[in-house]
Amino acid sequence: MAQPLEGLTAIVTGAGRGLGRAEALELARLGASVVVNDYGQPGRDGSGEASAAPAEDVVAEIRTAGGRAVAHLGDVADHDDARALVQLAVETYGRLDILVNNAGILRDRMVFSMTEDEWDSVIRVHLKGHFNTTHFAAAHWRERAKAAGGPVHGRIINTSSEAFLAGSAGQPNYAAAKGGIVGLTTSTALALAKYGVTTNAICPRARTRMTEDVFAGFPAHPGGREAGEGEGGGLDVLAPEHVAPLVGYLASSAAARVNGQLLVVHGGMVAIAERPRIAVKFDTGKDLFSFEELDELLSPYYAQRPPDETFAAAEVLALKHD
Image (tube, rainbow, N blue to C red; front, side, top):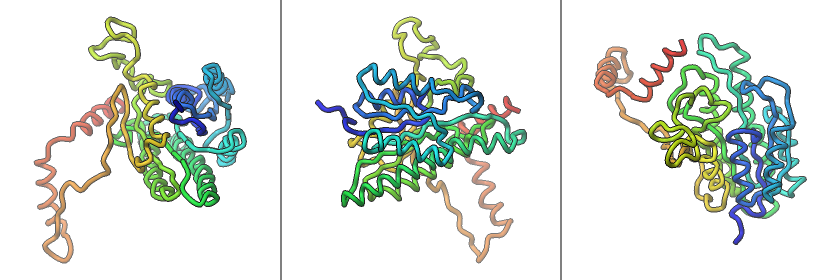
């Protein structure tokens, strides 16, 4: 029986470690040829000397398992490197079918302490990095669709975060970038649908090098057991391997009707997020709202509204960062 992604070519950015590595291995297992991109800097803040080892190690893993893979060591936030990444996929395997945007860095700081460079660097890698690869992949699919006279198989899976959904007090740069990625996702989904290309975003929760302090103390298994302890031992509920199957599904023809969606995924759970909806609407009884009328309408509404538990938890976290 043919594999779901047999004959397709995928790019996974930031695939040398963590989530990207798990996603690249899963796509290869499902039959795709994979371009493993990783700039290879050891620091989760994007610091340190770049190395070919992370990407090349994953390529070796895929090839040992009988798959097809090639490494790309460029910086996806660099426009020319992103162009070269897409070109490498096309020149090596004849086409590009799947783009998984995963590369990112962290430079956490409270908004009143954050430097301009800390803001710019995170926006650059996450948001500009997603745009750069999307731009060149989209141009490739548009040309293919024109040549074919109809839709082609194109899949973009972007990586957002629950930091965008619920807020993250010490990560204004990261939360803003991840929110921007959702906007890029929905815009791209509308623009490329007629070419047969779907664009979706995931909010993964996983224990990786980037999140080791965020999930410090979070049990590896229900009931507080650590990995390997007691009955069930095995896989950490926050292991990146829980995220990879959803990426494989979204990359396949089975997900042709899934477009412009945001999905939260972790530990054997997938949740589909709705787009924001209007909770309540107020109309002025005059030509123009006055301060007094707004006070009469809005203040009682917020006074009677139950506390937002997610936001309350975020406020507690903010106090810890302060």
